[in-house]
Amino acid sequence: MKIILLDLEDTITVHKTGLNRQNEVTIKWLSYNGIKNPVEFMALPEYKNRQERIKKIGITEKEYEKWYCNYGDIEFEKYLEDYSKGDITIASNVENFLQNCKLPKVLVSNSSPKWIDFILDKSGLSKYFTYIWKRKYNYNDVKKPNKEIKTQIEEILKQPISSDSIMIGDSKVDADFATNINVRFITNNKSLKAFKYFNDFAELNKIIK
Image (cartoon, rainbow, N blue to C red; front, side, top):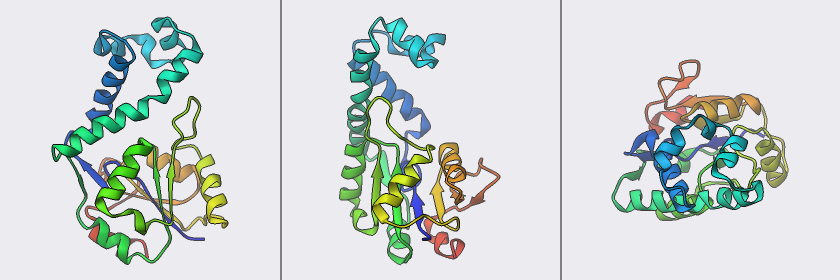
């Protein structure tokens, strides 16, 4: 079955704050969980490795698991704040594309499930998706680029995803996901030079034929 898989952030949505926002979310998350100097903490060599990070904080893995599970809530609060200031909008011609593309469409996003529900409801885009895949935000949850997502989607759709399906996204994670599940990748990110580029959703119905 040929389907269109779409990313959310920086693909369907436009963030004026740019990619640095994830650092801002992480700083808020660390601060929320009691780290007094989150910027300095993130700069430490130990921060890059989960086990070293846990050791440096001085908590157990079980305690850190609780931290991990509230990251999505912090992300939601940050994005909601940005949205209320007009710093997050929907990319031009998205709804027109979703309306006119007759192939089944599946959203695949690593973002906070609360945020996904909020922005799709506010923008009125939920109705165009056959399925909306969301991560569970537990300690060892599945997220892009893990190919297990394909299996989960196929179980919902009750049909295999064919290799002529297309993933539309903006990042290397999206590109890696497309490669991992053996589908084509189309991007709005010019720096991903190995893949077909589009500038606006108005172009996509012609490109994906």
